[in-house]
Length: 446
Image 1 (cartoon, rainbow, N blue to C red):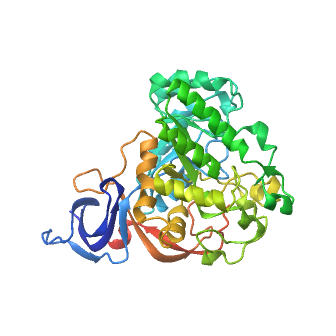
Image 2 (cartoon, helix red, strand yellow):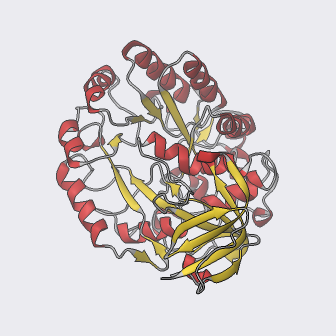
Image 3 (cartoon, rainbow, N blue to C red):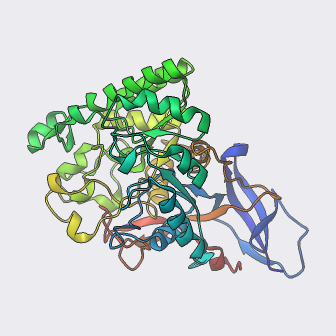
């Protein structure tokens, strides 16, 4: 038997609304006891000073992209799981943006088979569990209803195309069909007919930079349509990638009416607004010290939906803090260097984030007092699990052990050797950041 006693470590648990200093007794890597002071423990116990460390429930990734199958040069399922584990995620959920698309039970079985064959220990971190989103429509093209019953039987966690629904006439049929399946259904609220191929939120900056604008109404018209359908059919839905202040307002009004709607936003939309594209790192949270210089038109900031203005950013931060936006999604989207290192408007949208989100959100929002630590952990752990209809991870003696250790003071550089992901499409490439999830083995825990 292996036993370690973490003395006076900060324990964060959103389920019990707890954030306090405690002693934590670990027995064979599981939590044996948590108390303000523990005086009884096995004779062979290793005593560890937990000062400065945080113990919290494992993080839950609501949706991200796997390169495998079809785009293994970007990311394999192995490298994705390693990136997730080293970033503190004990559960990951894959979008059906693979090749072939996850629109049949055979692709679900293929991915589950790869995951089962991964080792249980990934460089000191436990292998995260895998959830798979099945495509709503065939080939995720938004034109024909997919094999939803077959996918449900194959064990998908829920249904989404991971992109806007091309054929709006399918929407009522989808909402009616999925009700008896009782699985989550998620939509990207965007009307492609209104985006105009825009790459920057419509406004003064898009005009000044000469980039094709993407209007706010492309998101809000789609949100309004979805709200009306839910009001008529009462099918619960999840809205992905919310990026505008008006979108937050519409969702809040719908929730006040009792409509079964949850929502998520991307971690990067919380950290940044559109000014970073012009080379300025300023935002309402203040300038992050490791981004004192930014390259204008950095293609790693080409996102979909595009970054909003400062009002959008503040509304998203407030929306998460007040529970209108329940979850923060990583939407980890790897691309090769050749794919991403082109002009801003031509670059494919997306960035990696599984290994970066927790430390950077902690530094930008928690350390600056914009969010509490409980708010951050709830949005990254408890809420995503609930959106997936899963029991959330919990830090409690006697319960299944699913926790992580986080050191917010560790300094490290974001490089190909320090990251587990195969791709490096992030604005933090070759920059120093603060905060790291640490493996139990680093504390002498087996």
